[in-house]
Length: 239
Image 1 (cartoon, one colour):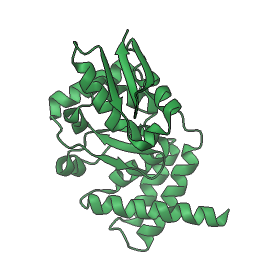
Image 2: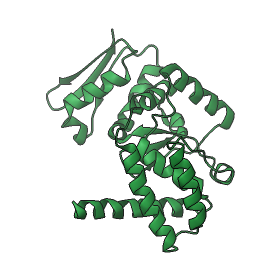
Image 3: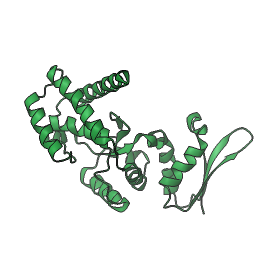
Image 4: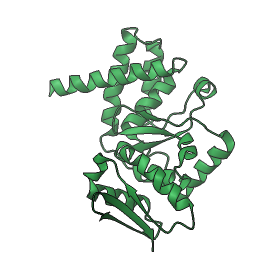
């Protein structure tokens, strides 16, 4: 048990230091937000699918985000930057991924507090330029308020212009496929199409069908696998 905890703590330390190296002008709040998302995911932000889609559209129009990247957090979630919309993923699909990723993490408070202990050790060792007294003060107040969602600092927003949604890592391997599907569905005259999958997804046909059924539940689609003489394809068509 101690060995597993040590491995987790080491992973958390590496994640924290990597995150700081990526955003060296961040403030303490930004690091706390990183750990919050790592533990809680996005359950604090999603009220409805329609609202999720509406706000993504608002953010796209207001900020015109161009960064397209996947930023792995210290846990079961990642930040997916909105620039992916320019790469083919639709707003509707991104909203659905965000919505499906929102769930109550029963162990989240415990996970967050473990990560905060690691962060405190790093600060005490002066491996990060944060003030320990400030850390204790903010964390005590945060804990007493039952760890509500925390905002990025003004500095972080100005320097890095973050524009992302937190999604479950289980969806990450499907992003390339989802972009291809969305580009096809965007063409109203394209009622049926086949897509060849990468080897990893070829081996997970039941998972592929289940994931796509969740994401495209609002579309009247038939999704299945078909064979030709040499290959197996994912077949999708509008009913």
